[in-house]
Image (cartoon, rainbow, N blue to C red; front, top):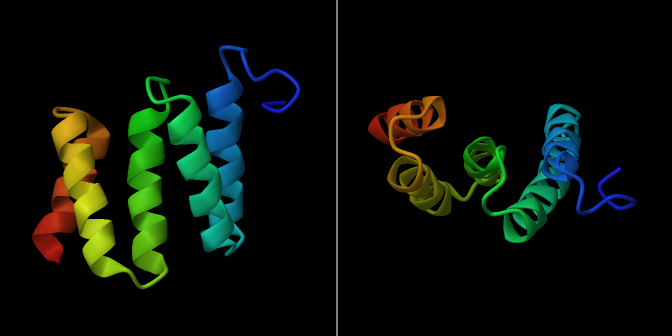
Length: 95
């Protein structure tokens, strides 16, 4: 969908959910790649906060804890007051 209709209002949603499926299937590195591309192409999209949080989770799962902490901090900084920021802050407190 997102390849065929890259300007569609739901293109960022399609990429986010693709990454979510990949993550749940254990294809974490591929999910991270999709999320990075989605965030680069649709930085103001409605799924950007969720995508950045999921990217942090992917990076942590890949064993890069310091990098994941930086991304969690970005979520808190860029999207204060959101559910994603609260989840990211909880991860930062634990690690």
